[in-house]
Image (cartoon, rainbow, N blue to C red):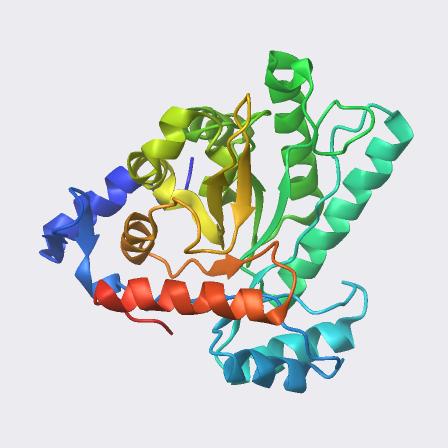
Length: 315
């Protein structure tokens, strides 16, 4: 059903004699295919020229990028973006969609699905690693908000239909359509994500790994290294790109996790980077949700420091 499965990959690698075991993980590591980690994030350069934008990513030490502003039908600009970023060895990690594919209002849902299709077409055009979204929400006021039906079979079945529709409209060959876990809607962990992968049953459907989105309980928060390992163990063959965030627990009378700059929270980046380095593809790691350049620079320095302590390389 899929061009690459973890079982088939490991069996082939073992037969070729290229496997070793990392001292930090029980997972087998394909030494011959280990690649430097590609780190990326937003930039704040006020420019529209793809060459200037690509060079700015390299100046900041990034080897992965969010796609610059473009439309799939503008083939000239799409080609310029791909050429400029390739020349600097900066991959386009993602073309984000970020709309509600399950909006309760039918016309809004239709328009949102059309937009996601357009974004996947752009991802295919620039050769991005993926086009990510979340499954959506039945919440009538907040497009990503909680709703009791977000954990239902109805939600799961509708998400399968939506993912198939988006992929079948474009039939991408170079990119993947991906969705993220969410703490209050499906998929809410690696098991429900794996179930969704098999239900969608499309080679172009993949995983956008955002481990912070799956931290929805004190158990997962305090044992996030184990949660990270479980996510990569079960979903690794389908991971196309990742987000870099951190979480802190804000003391209140109920559970409240707050996204913070990487290094200021409790996410185990030693575990995260170790698992990422063992993937058979160099899935980019993208900083997000910060406000100013200084915050991104702090997060970047922390990730590089942890990676260097582990002896990992960055592209």
